[in-house]
Amino acid sequence: MLLETVVYDDKLDNIIKNINEIKYTFESSNVAIGISESVENDLHYVKIICSDKDYSEKIKSKFYIYFAEELYKYIAGDFCKNKLRELVKESYFFLNPDEIDDVCKKCSRIILNYETINDSNISYINMVNSIVNKIIECIKENDEININGFTTFRMKNIEKDFCNIIDKIIENYMVEKEYDEFIKLLKYFVDIQDSKIDELNIYVDREGKYMLRDMDGNNIENKMIDELCDVNVSGVNLDDVLISGLITLSPEKIIIHCRESFTNKEIIQTIMNVFENKVFFCDDCKMCKELKRNLIRQ
Image 1 (spheres, helix red, strand yellow):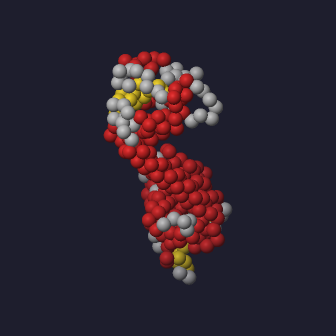
Image 2 (cartoon, one colour):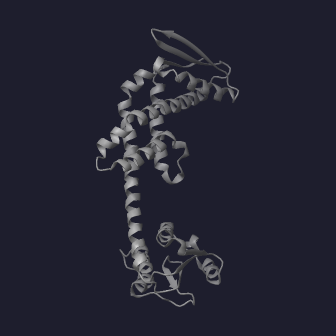
Image 3 (tube, one colour):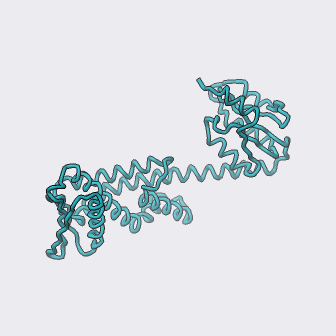
């Protein structure tokens, strides 16, 4: 049973290698796939055939997915090699050469190796999967696909999808850059401050409010920290107030207790980035055990 006829010219001779890889994938699952190739007027015609006994709509759907993924790799590779840099330079002219290099590397890594993207960037996987699904729909239109025709007439829409991925990558890149600058500024303030306390312990209660204690367990919140702990005012950013208090006190040592109880994990990362080797963690002291018993959020 014919699955698909793939047509391409000599410039795309690596396509047959990709088709053979699909063939081996099926054969590893005991599905017999045959390949028949002929050449007419410098065009290669490759028929991919499934044995009648193994054929099913499920097998055909799997083939569409496998071939769409291989076609995506070819399209993505060509885009990153020949169009990515100029597109970034033209659309994001405010980036300097080093930033353009960084952005292009990030874009290539995500567009070409999206399978390795971690869960924190699931949106990239969804955007790439959307492109693959569009390719699948194109393959389904008939039993023959001309790769050259596809890249000529269908690439404009796919390039728009690539541009959406690039926009998202650069948006995140600029946010990260601003965050790095913010951290540098905070570290500068810490460096020029005289330390007002040797050790500061940070706890969080069941309502998510922070409690600050010195090494003897004494409450050391200043007016700002008192507002943080005791007042629930709409619009007050407790994390910003905490960071401001830490900068003001500039402790020699910071101990964060029961880090898993912090609803905002980013605040912990910010503290670590600013205070670096001054930050320590505790999860087993008397206060930690008490907090764990009482930390039942409503």
